Image (cartoon, rainbow, N blue to C red; front, side, top):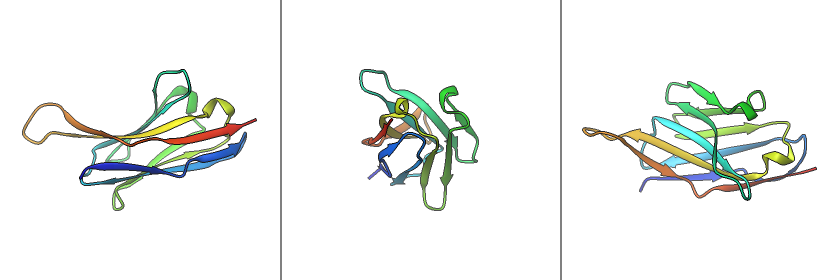
Length: 119
């Protein structure tokens, strides 16, 4: 069964840090991403990482968040530092991989995990 399971969320005061983990099972995703969705807002892409380690970040988190992956553990991480109340959101892990022998990609979402930053 293909699935993504997030962990590491919680509540922290502004200026604090959290590290999210997302453990994948059932397949290896070529690209893994973190999204977040704040109350009343659309889901937004936070960061992505390819299997070779190439990363991209939303402008709003550059220099503040770091995405990494451990391919041996099939896990992606999101290190979040200097957290602000605006970072409060449900964070979702996402993975995609090409469909062998066909067009398009196969993808999967985690259930999401709450991150709350208080001022």
